[in-house]
Length: 225
Image (tube, rainbow, N blue to C red; front, side, top):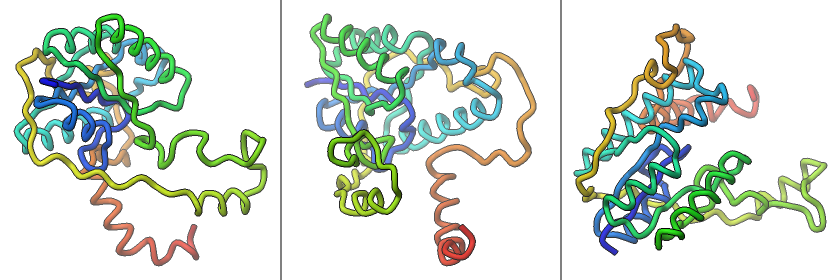
């Protein structure tokens, strides 16, 4: 296959991302795509703190892709329509996507599958990308949830996790139009004050915070959790 699309949603990272790995394996060229979903913004989720964190995440993702010879392609509008336009413009035969857990995400996934298949293209959905295991994988026999923690903990501890996916070393991105990386104000449509303790967004910032906690906070977790 000449090209494939890695459609980012909540999985804004390079390391351990089966969506990106799947697109790299599927096509000689890869389109790392993020669509600023105007429908989602209309639900009230585009508040200033969320928007600032998202803008940081997109900038960090783009920087990491550029270090590998690629870039993040940004579009604005309906996710299904924009993804299909990019697929048609680049000749991508497959779109790779993280499996969603919300009703909104699952409806979007079904709409995208239907639209792509109508155009002779495929949708590949990857589980255990934004959750540690696929939704529904850890359930008691004959029930839809655990009511007691200890049986759940035993079942969870026995669950095998998927192998960690390495970040790609290099990417080839075809020529395709992209919007500029959005700022927080562009995502919310207004310039609003942010919480003073809002953490920096992005994979690298998150890894720095985790490493700091692992060096100090982890040893004290049993006493302070």
